[in-house]
Amino acid sequence: MRRALVLSTVVLLAGCQGQAAEEDAAPEAAAAPSASASLDPAILARDAEQKRIWAAACAADETPVFTCTFKDGKRVAVCGAGEGNGRYRFGGATPEIEIDGGQYTSVMYSGGGESQIAFDNGDTRYIVFSRMVRTGFDEDGNNLPAISDGIVIERGGKFLDIKLCEDPDVLPVQTGAANAIWEDEREPFTEETMRADPPGNE
Image (cartoon, one colour):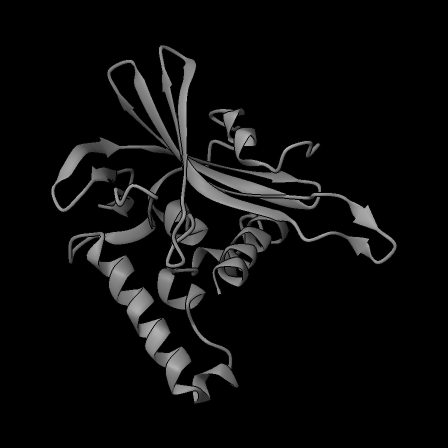
Protein backbone atom coordinates (compact mmCIF):
# COMPACT_ATOMS: atom_id res chain seq x y z
CA MET A 1 0.00 0.00 0.00
CA ARG A 2 2.84 2.39 0.85
CA ARG A 3 4.56 1.79 -2.49
CA ALA A 4 1.34 2.40 -4.41
CA LEU A 5 0.59 5.53 -2.37
CA VAL A 6 4.03 7.10 -2.85
CA LEU A 7 4.22 6.03 -6.48
CA SER A 8 0.86 7.62 -7.29
CA THR A 9 1.85 10.82 -5.48
CA VAL A 10 5.17 11.26 -7.28
CA VAL A 11 3.77 10.16 -10.64
CA LEU A 12 1.25 12.97 -10.28
CA LEU A 13 4.18 15.26 -9.56
CA ALA A 14 6.10 14.09 -12.60
CA GLY A 15 3.20 13.82 -15.03
CA CYS A 16 0.75 16.51 -14.00
CA GLN A 17 2.92 19.34 -12.69
CA GLY A 18 0.74 22.34 -12.02
CA GLN A 19 -2.49 20.60 -13.09
CA ALA A 20 -5.72 21.34 -11.28
CA ALA A 21 -6.26 17.67 -10.49
CA GLU A 22 -2.98 17.59 -8.59
CA GLU A 23 -3.84 20.71 -6.64
CA ASP A 24 -6.88 18.89 -5.34
CA ALA A 25 -4.72 16.04 -4.00
CA ALA A 26 -5.03 15.51 -0.26
CA PRO A 27 -4.38 12.74 2.23
CA GLU A 28 -7.99 11.61 1.85
CA ALA A 29 -7.64 11.33 -1.92
CA ALA A 30 -4.26 9.63 -1.71
CA ALA A 31 -5.64 7.03 0.65
CA ALA A 32 -8.89 6.36 -1.17
CA PRO A 33 -9.23 2.65 -1.86
CA SER A 34 -10.09 1.28 -5.28
CA ALA A 35 -13.64 0.17 -6.02
CA SER A 36 -12.75 -3.48 -5.51
CA ALA A 37 -10.68 -2.76 -2.39
CA SER A 38 -13.55 -0.80 -0.85
CA LEU A 39 -15.49 -4.07 -0.55
CA ASP A 40 -12.83 -5.56 1.74
CA PRO A 41 -13.48 -4.65 5.41
CA ALA A 42 -9.82 -5.22 6.32
CA ILE A 43 -8.68 -2.70 3.70
CA LEU A 44 -11.36 -0.24 4.77
CA ALA A 45 -10.19 -0.55 8.39
CA ARG A 46 -6.56 -0.10 7.35
CA ASP A 47 -7.47 2.99 5.30
CA ALA A 48 -9.35 4.52 8.24
CA GLU A 49 -6.40 3.86 10.56
CA GLN A 50 -3.99 5.56 8.13
CA LYS A 51 -6.20 8.64 7.98
CA ARG A 52 -6.37 8.71 11.80
CA ILE A 53 -2.57 8.54 12.08
CA TRP A 54 -2.07 11.32 9.53
CA ALA A 55 -4.67 13.57 11.17
CA ALA A 56 -3.16 12.99 14.63
CA ALA A 57 0.17 14.43 13.43
CA CYS A 58 -1.39 17.87 12.97
CA ALA A 59 -3.78 20.13 14.89
CA ALA A 60 -7.45 20.13 13.94
CA ASP A 61 -7.09 23.41 12.03
CA GLU A 62 -3.96 22.26 10.14
CA THR A 63 -3.57 20.30 6.90
CA PRO A 64 -1.37 17.17 6.97
CA VAL A 65 1.29 17.59 4.26
CA PHE A 66 3.92 15.02 5.27
CA THR A 67 4.41 12.67 8.20
CA CYS A 68 6.28 9.52 9.10
CA THR A 69 7.88 7.70 12.02
CA PHE A 70 11.53 6.67 12.07
CA LYS A 71 13.12 3.48 13.33
CA ASP A 72 13.86 5.09 16.70
CA GLY A 73 10.16 5.92 17.18
CA LYS A 74 10.56 9.67 16.59
CA ARG A 75 7.99 11.30 14.30
CA VAL A 76 8.30 14.12 11.80
CA ALA A 77 5.30 16.04 10.53
CA VAL A 78 4.76 18.98 8.21
CA CYS A 79 1.37 20.63 8.58
CA GLY A 80 -0.19 23.46 6.62
CA ALA A 81 -1.17 26.44 8.76
CA GLY A 82 -2.37 28.92 6.13
CA GLU A 83 -1.07 30.46 2.93
CA GLY A 84 2.71 30.75 3.01
CA ASN A 85 3.00 29.06 6.39
CA GLY A 86 3.73 25.49 7.35
CA ARG A 87 4.79 23.90 10.61
CA TYR A 88 7.60 21.39 11.03
CA ARG A 89 7.50 19.19 14.12
CA PHE A 90 9.96 16.51 15.17
CA GLY A 91 10.12 14.38 18.27
CA GLY A 92 8.11 12.00 20.39
CA ALA A 93 4.81 12.62 22.13
CA THR A 94 6.05 16.17 22.80
CA PRO A 95 7.85 17.86 19.87
CA GLU A 96 11.56 18.48 20.41
CA ILE A 97 11.70 20.87 17.46
CA GLU A 98 8.90 23.04 16.07
CA ILE A 99 9.50 25.55 13.26
CA ASP A 100 7.06 27.78 11.36
CA GLY A 101 7.46 28.97 7.78
CA GLY A 102 8.92 26.66 5.18
CA GLN A 103 9.66 26.61 1.47
CA TYR A 104 8.53 24.04 -1.08
CA THR A 105 9.98 22.74 -4.31
CA SER A 106 9.18 19.99 -6.79
CA VAL A 107 11.44 18.66 -9.51
CA MET A 108 10.93 16.09 -12.23
CA TYR A 109 13.43 13.42 -13.27
CA SER A 110 13.46 11.00 -16.15
CA GLY A 111 11.39 8.18 -14.67
CA GLY A 112 10.54 9.92 -11.43
CA GLY A 113 10.47 13.11 -9.41
CA GLU A 114 10.91 14.61 -6.00
CA SER A 115 9.25 17.05 -3.59
CA GLN A 116 11.16 18.83 -0.83
CA ILE A 117 10.03 21.14 1.97
CA ALA A 118 12.73 23.10 3.80
CA PHE A 119 12.60 24.73 7.24
CA ASP A 120 15.41 26.87 8.66
CA ASN A 121 16.32 27.08 12.35
CA GLY A 122 19.35 29.36 12.67
CA ASP A 123 22.12 27.83 10.56
CA THR A 124 20.40 24.41 10.53
CA ARG A 125 18.09 23.42 7.71
CA TYR A 126 15.64 20.50 7.85
CA ILE A 127 14.51 19.27 4.43
CA VAL A 128 11.75 16.67 4.30
CA PHE A 129 11.47 14.84 1.00
CA SER A 130 9.55 12.28 -1.00
CA ARG A 131 11.59 10.89 -3.87
CA MET A 132 11.17 8.40 -6.72
CA VAL A 133 13.99 7.55 -9.13
CA ARG A 134 14.50 5.08 -11.96
CA THR A 135 16.70 2.12 -11.07
CA GLY A 136 17.44 0.75 -14.53
CA PHE A 137 16.05 -1.24 -17.42
CA ASP A 138 15.64 -4.84 -18.45
CA GLU A 139 14.09 -6.63 -21.41
CA ASP A 140 10.62 -5.70 -20.14
CA GLY A 141 11.40 -1.98 -19.81
CA ASN A 142 11.89 0.05 -16.62
CA ASN A 143 12.70 -1.76 -13.40
CA LEU A 144 10.66 -0.85 -10.35
CA PRO A 145 11.63 2.64 -9.18
CA ALA A 146 13.33 3.37 -5.87
CA ILE A 147 10.97 5.25 -3.54
CA SER A 148 12.12 7.00 -0.38
CA ASP A 149 10.91 9.54 2.16
CA GLY A 150 12.79 11.20 4.97
CA ILE A 151 14.71 14.25 6.22
CA VAL A 152 18.07 15.68 5.22
CA ILE A 153 19.68 17.88 7.87
CA GLU A 154 22.26 20.48 6.85
CA ARG A 155 24.22 22.88 9.02
CA GLY A 156 26.01 25.90 7.64
CA GLY A 157 25.12 24.71 4.14
CA LYS A 158 26.87 21.35 4.65
CA PHE A 159 25.37 17.87 4.94
CA LEU A 160 24.94 16.71 8.53
CA ASP A 161 22.58 13.70 8.48
CA ILE A 162 19.83 11.88 6.65
CA LYS A 163 16.97 10.01 8.35
CA LEU A 164 14.82 7.68 6.26
CA CYS A 165 11.22 6.83 7.02
CA GLU A 166 10.57 3.23 7.99
CA ASP A 167 6.84 3.53 8.38
CA PRO A 168 4.06 1.65 6.54
CA ASP A 169 1.78 4.60 7.32
CA VAL A 170 4.04 7.26 5.81
CA LEU A 171 2.23 10.21 4.29
CA PRO A 172 4.53 11.35 1.46
CA VAL A 173 4.67 15.02 0.53
CA GLN A 174 1.18 15.93 -0.66
CA THR A 175 1.91 18.09 -3.69
CA GLY A 176 -1.58 19.55 -3.94
CA ALA A 177 -1.58 20.66 -0.31
CA ALA A 178 1.99 21.99 -0.59
CA ASN A 179 1.14 23.99 -3.71
CA ALA A 180 -1.80 25.54 -1.86
CA ILE A 181 0.54 26.73 0.92
CA TRP A 182 3.80 27.70 -0.79
CA GLU A 183 5.02 28.90 -4.16
CA ASP A 184 6.94 26.14 -5.92
CA GLU A 185 10.62 27.13 -6.09
CA ARG A 186 11.22 24.48 -8.82
CA GLU A 187 14.86 23.97 -7.84
CA PRO A 188 16.03 21.36 -5.30
CA PHE A 189 17.11 22.72 -1.93
CA THR A 190 19.62 19.88 -1.64
CA GLU A 191 21.07 17.07 -3.75
CA GLU A 192 21.84 15.04 -0.63
CA THR A 193 18.57 13.12 -0.94
CA MET A 194 20.48 10.94 -3.43
CA ARG A 195 21.93 9.25 -0.36
CA ALA A 196 18.55 7.52 -0.03
CA ASP A 197 18.93 5.79 -3.41
CA PRO A 198 20.05 2.15 -3.72
CA PRO A 199 23.85 1.65 -3.83
CA GLY A 200 25.18 1.98 -7.36
CA ASN A 201 22.05 3.71 -8.61
CA GLU A 202 22.70 6.32 -11.27
